[in-house]
Amino acid sequence: MAKSVAVIGAGPSGAIAVDALMQERVFNVRVFERQEKAGGCWVSRDDAPPQKFDLDGLAARTADVPLKIPEQLPCRTPVVGQDRFTDSPVYPGLETNVDAGAMEYSQEKIPTVRSQWSIERHGEDTPFRHHSVMRQYIEDLFTKKGNADLVQYNTTVERAIKDAASQKWVLTLRRTESLNDSQSDYWWSETFDALVVASGHYAVPYIPAIPGLKEFAERYPGSIEHTKHYRGPEKYRGKKVVTVGASVSAADTAVSLVGTAKSPIHCVTRGRYNVFFGNDAFQHPMIQERGPILHIGVEDRSIHFEDGTSETGVDNILFGTGFTWTLPFLPAVQTRNNRVPDLYQHTFYRHDPTLVFVGAVGAGLTFKVFEWQAVAAARVLAGKATLPSVSEQEKWETDRIAERGDGPAFTVINPEFKAYFEAMRLLAGEPQNGIGRPLPPFEEKWVDDFNAGHERRKKMWRRNNAVGKL
Image (cartoon, rainbow, N blue to C red; front, top):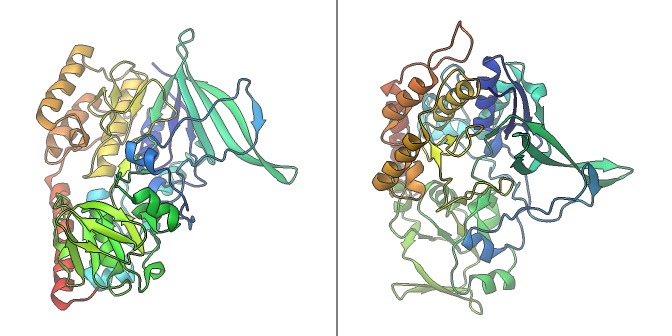
């Protein structure tokens, strides 16, 4: 049984992992969060977007490289200048795109705080919540349970290695501090029996390689962005904008530009729409769908499409093309095809039972999925639940690859929500002598609310499309 546990990340998966661990009453827990507050990808900060991107690295999914670790610890070094992708992905008007009832943890309800923007578009009973509500909800899980002091903010885990002799996890940590009116990085190490990776996977943007893109970005600084850097439509007023992508962020960005950017908004969708939201967002009369990009011209700011058409005078290209899974701090685990391999039930690292992941899944009932993973992980680490044999764990993954493929689709729980939730609840077992966080039986209402929320957003888009406005 593990006694000391390190949790990497204080976002929605880290928060519930800490709660589940602490309710077992056997662990000493430390949480390391590189941002200044809890909330993960819901932390809002007016970060200036990078003026230059490592486009080769972003396209190859290799941009987030590990830092060189100092030879002697503890020590101080100059502040790291390498981009660590800590900038916020939140824009001021961001709202959830999932019903609050489908998002929330099983015991802690998301506050019924509705923005005027959402009420105007979805009615007085709108089920969606502003990003600020979600961030506070995550922080409240720490503060209201008495776990706030477990978190060390502004601290990055730069390396996590299992020491062969002691069988302990050795974490190399870095924190930027002010000293004598100047800043420096302080490095040190700490050891733990077990490690929970709850660091999320919406930090490093993916921007595909397109002929001419690098030259365009160099000639016109700030013209190439990822939707992670979007901060609202005003910057693009009167500009000719091309968006790339057909999932949630690309759809939201394109729609929000209507009436501000020059009409039409040109949207490269390739016909690969989000499975939940379809193409309704792109049917607005001020949005024009375009096919795949063939190449980009620098001199006349042109984009040439595979169907033989082109657009000149393009001011901005916004990529809503997703993110890359990166684990620069964990050399023992290599990502593959933009997922983390060898995780039984998307949670337990098959080669080492003291390493678990919370949140390594695709979309759908995410906070609740995190909760079920966290409770199962806490019980296993506490020695109160037992994993199947390594061969059975390997078979689970092999069978799933055969069914879903060895890529991002592997991590998507939908539509097998009930089977997954119940399997994790069975693995976790019930709290013993009332100690531990209980998991309730799966409720179909969660999926009904999840789907109803999507339908509500699609109806909003269809209404707007019919009248030709935002």
